[in-house]
Length: 363
Image (cartoon, rainbow, N blue to C red; front, side, top):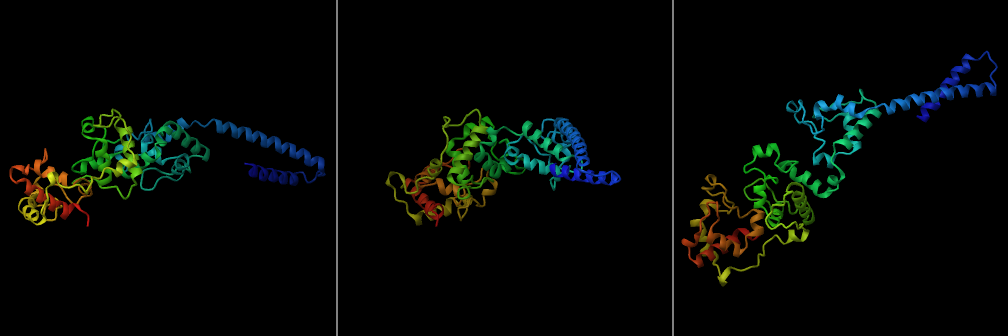
């Protein structure tokens, strides 16, 4: 403004010089002219200041933004149903993470490609846009308590929300297109089936026969612990989690989720690999497949699907004692029968040894 003022003052002075050229131009004339110009400039500044204070960002939002983003900034508007992608929900955790005043200003000025968000720089002044951005930030974006859950919420937004949704209930596309559906963390019945150890294992090693992939290796142990804590504290407010007792997970817990693969078979049994191979071929391949990948000929008619022994979750949890018990006792609510009525204890040990050495132990 100072630069413009100087230019404006110089222009006025030049014009007055030309108009007053018949008059003798001396230092007193110059002083009088400067006083007049300063008075005019001061008056203009007062007018501009009045215009600045007269900006009402709430009215701007209602007039230009609410038709798409909704009166409450949550994107629930009449226009929402017809827009793909839908308007931004300023109240979501994702917006709290992604948006700051600078980014909001840029979006209002230039629009957002690939969306219905148009550029407003030709309609609104810079001051109006800045005022509007501040209004959105102060009235709709979640408080700093959410944004300060920074690492956990950022990890969730980047890696988890695409399937589990911003609110932990499952993204619309994922619940419609994935079978089984992603876990709804807000479901109280589901919460009673979860425990802290299982949640950490699921993030670290994934869930067989689901879209849940293994994140260990892409996320550090600390990041896995952080995002599990975030999920529990944000979406499982009732804390109806088996064995949780409100304790927090830690990187050490992620390390300890992998079963001890050095443990031997129970009762000092020594399994025989070759005998186990024959038993597996005759009894197990129809469901678990020759390669142990859970894709045997019967697998396509079974739900839940047979265990994939090559999956990271299997390789992290199925040591010899666990395999022996699973083969012996079977698994509830699945097609896996209890083989203790068919095989003797030595045969159970033999097939356990084969599965462990052939599929579970990483080469």
